[in-house]
Length: 450
Image 1 (cartoon, rainbow, N blue to C red):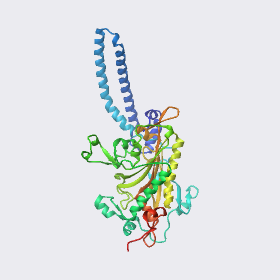
Image 2 (image 1 turned 180 degrees about the horizontal axis):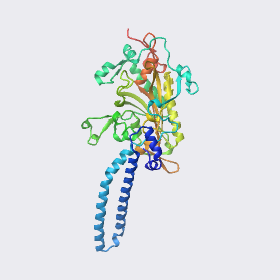
Image 3 (image 1 turned 135 degrees about the vertical axis):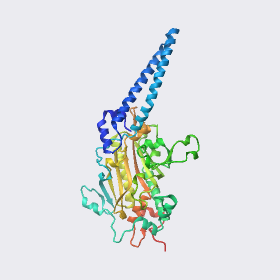
Image 4 (image 1 turned 180 degrees about the vertical axis):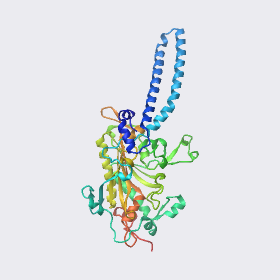
C-alpha cells in the first residue's frame, strides 16, 4: 500500500505503475473517494470541535442557556450521525481501492506486458561458472546439460524408478495430485534440511509458521485482494473450535504471509534490524490462473513444500537493494550446491505482483522441457507490505518509519526434483544422486528395481 499523500502528489507515477503492471484500477475514482472521505471527515471534526467548545463553556452558562445549548447539541449529534452514515460506504470503497494501488517499480525493472518482457542477465553451470549474456551471448547456449542418449522426462524416470506416482495421486487427490515415494521422499526432505541448515548458518531464525491463516495476513502480504482466486478457503467454519474462529480462514500458498503477520502492528527498535526469518511449511495453491498449463507431471501442482526467507530492514533503498542481492545469492548457492544449470531473470512490470518494487526469478534447466523452469523467486517490496500490516521501526532519531520487506524462495519441492531427476539421469535409466543429498538418500545412484 502506498501513502495516500504520496499518491495525490505523484498521480502520474502511480498511473504509470497501474498501466505497466496491468492493474484494474481507476486512479481518478480513488482520488474522488479520497476527496469525499476528507470532506466528510472535516465536517465531523468541525462538529466535534463545536461540541468540545460547548462542553468547556457549559459550567459558566445560565440554566436557560444550558437548555438551549443541549438542544443545539442534539442537532449536532444528529448531523454527526448522518455524516457517519454517508462516510461508511465512502470509506469502504476508498479502502478497497487503496488495497489495489501497486508499488512503484524500480528504475531497473524492465517494462513489459508479461513473461515475454523478462530479461535474463545471469547464467550458470558447473563447468562454465557465471556467464553474463550481454558479454558472452554465445556461451549461454552451452549452459544446458548435454546428453549422448535420448532424454527421459521426470514422470517416466519417476515411474521407472518408483519415485513418483501421479495416477494414484489423481485418483486420491484429484487433478494435479501426486505421490512421492522412496528415494524421492528422502531427496525432498534432504533438500529441506540442507536449506534450513544453510539459513541457520546465515543468521536466519527458523520457524514452522501456521498454514491456516486469517484474511488480514493475506491482505497484508498483498495476496488479497488481487490474488484471491489462487487461495484455498476453508469451507467448513462450523468445524473450527470457537465462535471467533468461524471467521473466514485460508490455506497459505507460501509461508510469507504468516512470517510477515508475526510482526503485524509492532514497532521494532532500529538496533534489532535487519530481522531475518526463515519458514518451512506445506503450501497450497489453486492454480486457477494457470488453467491448461503444465498439466503433465509435478511442475504445476496444488500442494508442495517450501523453505522461504523473509527480511525486514531499514527503509533505505540501498539496504533493500543489497538484501535483494544477498537473498538471490543464497538461492543461487542452493542450485550451485546441487550443480544444476540455471539462469536469473529480471522480472518485468507485467509479470510481477502489485507490491513488487524489484523482482528476480531463478529458472533451472529442465531437459525434457528443453527450457528453463522457474524454481525460485526473489522480491523487494519496500514498505508496501509494512504499511498494510503496520510494521514499523523506531529510528535512532526517535522517528517511526515503516520497515522494508523482502522475500525469497530458498527451495521448493517437488518442482526442484524435476531438475534433479532429469539433469542427473544416466543412459541406463538410473539417476545419480547429487553429492549433497547422498547422506540423506543413502546411496549414490537410484536404479530400477530388479
